[in-house]
Length: 205
Image (cartoon, rainbow, N blue to C red; front, side, top):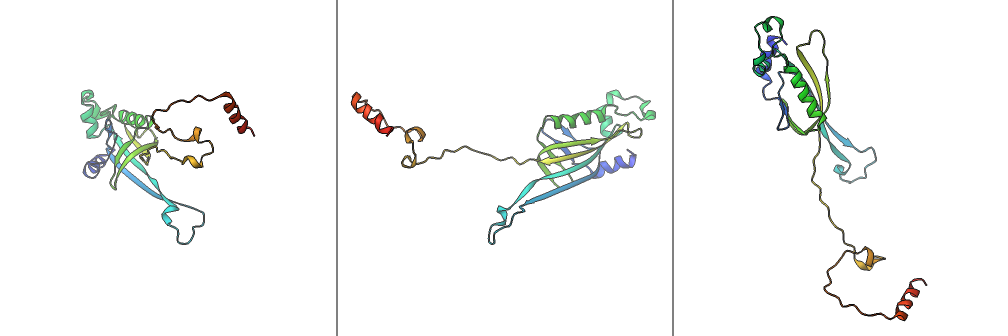
């Protein structure tokens, strides 16, 4: 990352972040952000006069972040100042562990499937999961890191359970399938054996 890139990042990329409350990842450089909003539309014929909203639904937004970090950035210097050595100016190893820590933070957020909030230049996304993390290291990027994050918002809805009561007069075995009702205290009556046997016989006729 050149000095011009760092200066541009400080001037124009402030406010971008990916966080879940405990962890907050802020890019040193924003290269590209791609936003995708899709409407799911039925392939079946739609009857004339039918509500179109019954045959089309909004798919949770997907977006791609191309963010960069560098061990030479000002943020890396301030967070790793205890490791600072004068020779680092020559070798370029400023903030040696910075990009590794950022990479591990992204991986943990993905593996723990933590819902995140992402702030981009276009909009703010809530309930986001990191679908994939793509990065590459070459001889020219040993002390910097460009990451492509494919993210997807998740729809969170509230559900509740309800009971459906069916009238006992339409139930075949109401004594078994109907809901329990409070009928007060009942007095048991003796039933003679002849009457009981007659009722059993009627059930099998």
